[in-house]
Amino acid sequence: MTTTKTKPESGSHLKNLDYSVLQQCMHCGLCLPTCPTYDATKIERNSPRGRISLMRAIADGRLEATPTFADEMYFCLGCLACMTACPAGVNYAELFEHARAEAEQSGVLNSPKRTLIRQFTLRWLFMDLRRLRLIGYGMRLYQRIGLQALIRKSGILKLFPKRLQELESMTPTIQPKFSAELIDAITPAAGQKKYRVAMLTGCAQDLIFSDVNLDTVEVLARNGCEVVTPRLQHCCGSLHAHNGEWAMAQGLARKQLDQFPPDAYDAIITNAAGCGSHLKHYEKLLHDDPAYVERARAWDHKVKDIHEWLAEIGVKPPTGRSLPAQNVTYHEACHLCHGQKITSQPRAILNAIPNLNLTELPESMWCCGSAGIYNIIQPEMANELLDRKLKHIKSTQVPIVATGNPGCLLQIVNGAKKEGLPLRVVHPITLLAEAYRASK
Image (cartoon, rainbow, N blue to C red):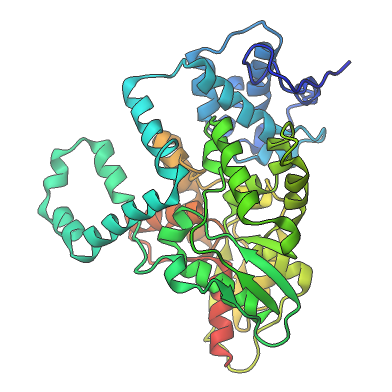
């Protein structure tokens, strides 16, 4: 017998979750070989099956949230490879988010340092992207006047703890201009207008990969889309949902629905795999909010990853003068291939580019270790996964890696830099945009 609960009974996310979701797991173990953490440790607790057993024990009242439980939920990458492998269709993504929310609600991991970091990042910085942009302006100035390079050359960083040195080396390069400075509020279709779409510019994507946003808008316009790109957008809430801040994720979802009424567009476009996986589940996030649930349902149907949308409408192949031959391999972002089940579409786009030779990457679906902020909070496991990914990239002997997620882009860029590997890491849509420009 299954029960569906919509009203909190004890403040427990897992006890108030639809119990049938927890019951789906058959404990068959087919997920085990696909789980990076279990593959590394061979410890049952570090597997999807083991984690679901812990979640169910809490839902059944046989276990309370403990530091060990919370640590285990944050040891999970959330890569969702287990969902691709699962024959029973277990919704691990939903379980994973509620389990982390359970951990946060219990407070078992609370410490002054951790609370301060979460207050600053999740509850202040990413709740208003004007604040994030202000930080971006400061970082851009720090980099452009040469202060970052000077500090790195001075050797002063060697006085800091090793972990701080590692974090500083991961600092991304801030773009010269953010999305609002590059992209018009309305970009007309090139030629006949066939569709009207909205463009989501993202958070980190806006600061670090605004050029990819510009490429995306250009590609959409060349494929018959009028593109609406509001100047100041909101965080989609994926960072909050994946880190146990359920109420904040709901609040940010409502802001998105207010800013982008789904009925006004043929599609709502995202080019960041991690965000897209979350963006397609607003109905479940807001299922108990009568004022928003219908809009959320319509929204879920309208949100499209850029590769998915181009495949749906039929991508226009570049013609005319071509770029020189390019040898490329493709790393599949976890939340694109496992979370959204989008695997063939990016390859179809790459194969549509003249003079581009696509070499398949061994273990292309295996996580690179980025996983949101996983490479910050779990550096040892993240680095182990990065080393494994770079080993396979080197085996292809190609100079270009394409991938559709900003976190993966940064992770592989930093790994290549550390190893002195001459590698260009790029979004597939950038390669398509470059081919369009060359074909003029």
